[in-house]
Amino acid sequence: MASLTGKVAIVTGSSRGIGRAIAERFAADDASVVVNYARSADEAHRVVAGIEAKGGKAIALQADFGIVADVRRLFRDTIAKFGRVDIVVNNAWAVARGVPKAFSEITEDEFEASFTHNARGSFFLMQEAARTIGDHGRIINVTTAGTSICPPGFSIYVGGKCAMEAFSTTLAAELAARGITVNIVSSGAVETKTFRDLPGEVQTMLEQRTPLGMGQPRDIAGMVAFLAGEEGHWITNEKIRVDGGAR
Image (cartoon, rainbow, N blue to C red; front, top):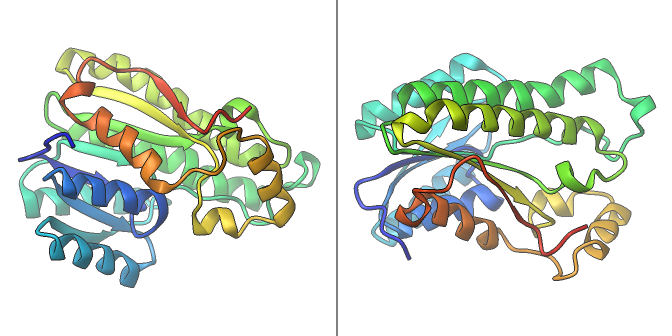
């Protein structure tokens, strides 16, 4: 494992699933970790307790990415606790209710709910990261292989993530002079509660489109850890698919 000794990492949406695996991997690599959650306080504190039980350093901080003030407070509270921010993993996301849903049937409320978190929330998180993170830091945006394969019924979710990827590309160019890398890790079908909550036919479709079979949260965490470490210092403005060959 790469050493992240002395580094401070914020991982959004890390009370469960992929975010939790990333937070635990960072802690194992000796970073101080902020476990962010919107509503799952008990789960977030269990993640922190598990990290601390293994000798790691972590705190749980609440922030809802639909609220810009929460995003800014998350960074302030991190600096108040740890004094700096070196790594930001933009992992929090929202799937619109009722997916999959035909393009022609999506309501204004569903559109707003999806884009509030997946596009607007991601933009202001990256903005605050750009303002706060130290030189030679890392910003890693976890998106979905859906932006490449575009499965039917996921238009507003995929659309929000495409916006997130566009923001990432622009920000990478703006921050390169400071040695800050900005990359995208595009996740395929991973065994999480969110995946299990999808309709059975959607799960089957995604599994059938994944030659290497279902992934695990640790598969995404490994790539994120690589980009966050010293080995990733010359990689920026990239979209790396970790998706089991999904097409």
